[in-house]
Amino acid sequence: MMVEELEALYRHRLADFTRAAAMIAGDDESGRDAVQEAFAKALRKRRRFRGEGNLEAWIWPIVVNAARDAGRRRRRGAVAATPVEARADELGLPLELLTERQREVLFLHYYADLDYAAIAHALGISAGTVGATLTAARQTLRGALTKEVSR
Picture 1 (tube, rainbow, N blue to C red):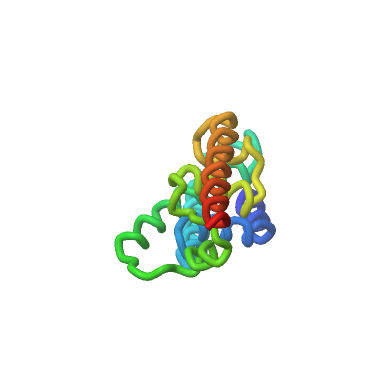
Picture 2: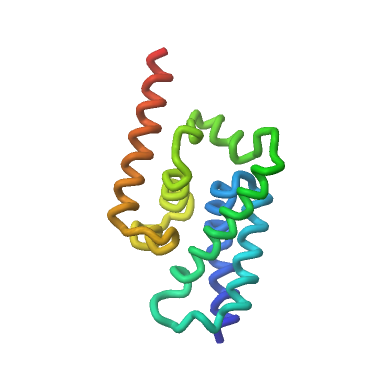
């Protein structure tokens, strides 16, 4: 039963998982790999899911952790800008000004369309911390963009 539910979730939300993982990991390929790795791990450890809460809430922390690991591996060997960084540059978003947590909260909120409770669960923080982190990230980006416009 659990295998079919995981497969259905994978098919239904693959684009959201991949988009968020790519933003966290730093490039599209690493994001795709992280999602594959996360779902493979979830299948291996599916007996740990006791049916309390929803399956998607259970899988998000696995995806986020796999994306973090992929990002660390990528950064150890990367030199040039990746496609994700290039897209952020095109949008004029100075993501390098944000902390890792701010970027993750921002990506999970806007790219994966998760609510504060789901983000809190995925990152292992409180919903209040999600709100405060998102506010701080927005303020940082707003300040940087305002400075850029006034130049």
